[in-house]
Length: 289
Image (tube, rainbow, N blue to C red; front, side, top):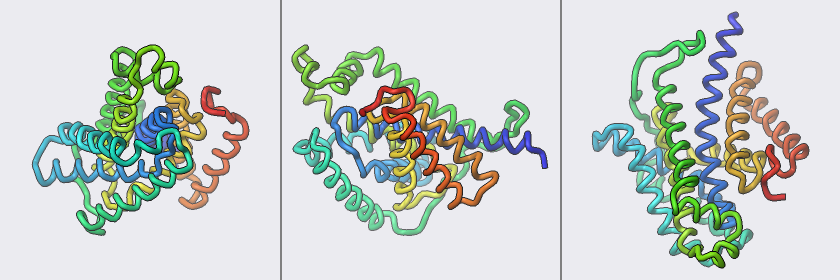
């Protein structure tokens, strides 16, 4: 058995999965940072992004990258509307906000079941062939997904760091009252933050669609993983979520080499709990206590 090859493949697979978890978790923690609300419907927005990519690519014949961008825009705009109409009364109300998002998740999932049916669907591969990366053959489709995910995260970083809207959003995340005193109209940033957060989940789902099957129930497992990433990274800490997302993806991939799926999931859960005990404020110590 060539362990060098297996470990290399596991590392690449772990980075791909970790980047998708990262997109989910960054959106999740952005919503929490802006609204102080745990969004239990986040997995359903991930699922909607995957279905957007499927219908726009397979049914409408659009290029895959256009479908991914459209998934972000369509789901993000829907998120802005949902925040303004449904979630507005529950901003900074963690308990009732959590209950409302659980109800929202059930509604979206059942509407998707009615609209798309229970049977999973698949996208054709976005590209063929493979490339050698550090001596390991990697399918080009996975490299394509990695490139897209990195580009999306770079665009998000540039938006938050250098744009006026991004700086306002960061100010609201840090301290909404102080931001309001300094002239930032915080109320405008709540739907924007929620829309960007769920749009990132949609991009994660759209990028995942060519690699795995798409179904109305596909958002549950990524939501759990995103929740673990956010807790381990530190609630409200985007850099912490980035580190934790990649760690979780690698850990999951390596455990699959030696353990069954259920045993591997249990081990990961135990390690996450131990990580939370060792780093109660997140892996870089900047999350909520």
